[in-house]
Image (cartoon, rainbow, N blue to C red; front, top):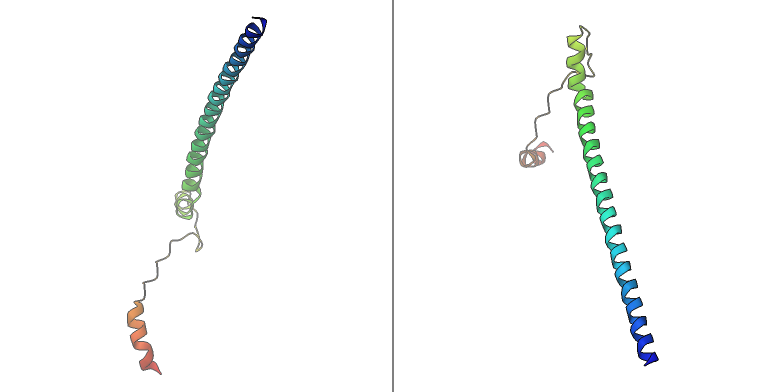
Length: 99
């Protein structure tokens, strides 16, 4: 009878320990989810700030700001025309005739 009582008491203590560990695991998981959400929110804030910085510091915006202030933006900040694409098939067909 004493062995049975000790076994039941042991199982009860082990069960309580397992339940306590599960509860602790759930608390830690909840804290990690909150921390992850905060990190993601800060990352989005950082991305928004990077977009605003890039909008205000791109060359065309700087050139417009200088023009509004009455200064010359110079050649470095003026937009250039894109080169026209070369048709590779046409270039390949003409290349043998140039020899």
